[in-house]
Length: 559
Ligand code: ADP
Image 1 (tube, helix red, strand yellow):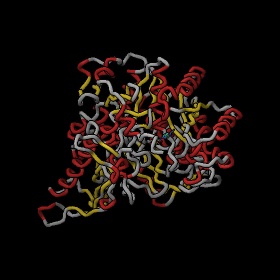
Image 2 (cartoon, helix red, strand yellow):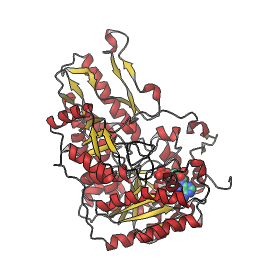
Image 3 (tube, rainbow, N blue to C red):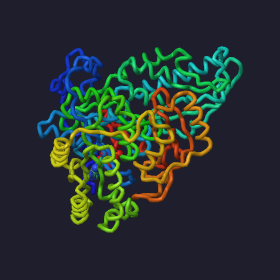
Image 4 (cartoon, rainbow, N blue to C red):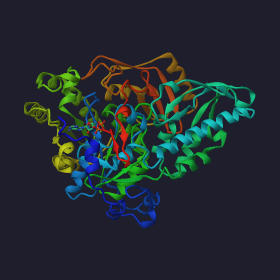
């Protein structure tokens, strides 16, 4: 077992080209890059203006079945498919999210793909990268400081200190900070009030950052952020505090997308990384747009399964992006399908066709969802060495019988070479398609209609149950004129339902809407279906315990 090298070992053995060499492959002018050392560069927004007339590359969205602890390998397939398309001579740029340090130090230990389909330098990408997330932390906390200073200086806006919704953030998993009291110590130390911390990637600023089209749009969205309510229960915004200019300034450099390379030197733009529950879980619009100007094809990813990530990409990101994906790749693994069929993690090594048969219903539901948007798709079966021949051929036969395009991929083991079949299948689906796209709801649908459409069509639920707290918030949302905004569902990623334990394809369930929270700056309404963690805690054995660095500065333990 020790013969299989870890992701970080593979990454450290890979040779990188200077980022300037990657830039040379692309239509980028010298003054349009800002070098961050030898292997990372930031790209100027000017690229979008200069190439405004150029046709956009075709966008391929990578999504998955409901995630299981067995791991699906969505990022790995995203990187591998990008490499494979480049191998086929299709100029392809990958667009991905930046990893948050919270999950990296806690559970995941890294999120830059895996095996021979990784983005490099993986240590940098997983640690502080180009500082974007730190800039977002600073902007978020600058706003928090402005709010408390405003109150301390006389509270002209009459902010109700019990109704402040803006929280402080830190990009770590730190449960002890979930609820805090600030301003203790007497009259010169501020006004005491209850506060709390979220993880940075759950900050509305991260969502705003990822949906903004340019600096002007960024500033306008920041200005619209509601930080809480005044004593008359009217919303108080960033604009009321007059700090949108300063916040935009703090984000100026961070807003330039980051260019790196994969192990096979395919260009990859890694920019922005919002949570996929409380936010929309996709890399920045600017990053995707730039990838689409620089490549003839873009491979991009959305967080969690198609019920959350893809649905939000298609209803929330697509309007900002200005165009829709030309094809969707749904990643599945034999292991994960078996878990959906009722097996536990320690039973996965053994062949079990019965479990596959039950679990594949989860795949089927996600296929139906993508079909309902009218988009072409291919299932990518991400092969693991433990998969048996009988299991793989079961999935292949099932797909054939249902006329579902699928390709077996070995991008983890073989890099781009292992994704050629997938790349060919995707290209052929794009070729055949008439490039249509139908969103499931429109802005003018009511909030209730939007919730019901998502619950029924995407989750397969009977309907929604809106609890009294959420009903009250709905009245406020409609009253303030926010009802046209899209919905950002905050639901467990593990199940199509709102109960994490219901795997496979649950039937006869309703979705309970507990709270509706407007994220007016980002431009969506968050619908909470359960307790969604906006500040995760660390597990008993955090991934950090395995991390180290030697005297030469070589990192270990980032998986
Ligand atoms: P996701 O994006 O779905 O969270 P990742 O692509 O980050 O998944 O992969 C999760 C982990 O699983 C990574 O450590 C990766 O190296 C590993 N992995 C992915 N695909 C395979 C595979 N086919 N065989 C073995 N390990 C894999």
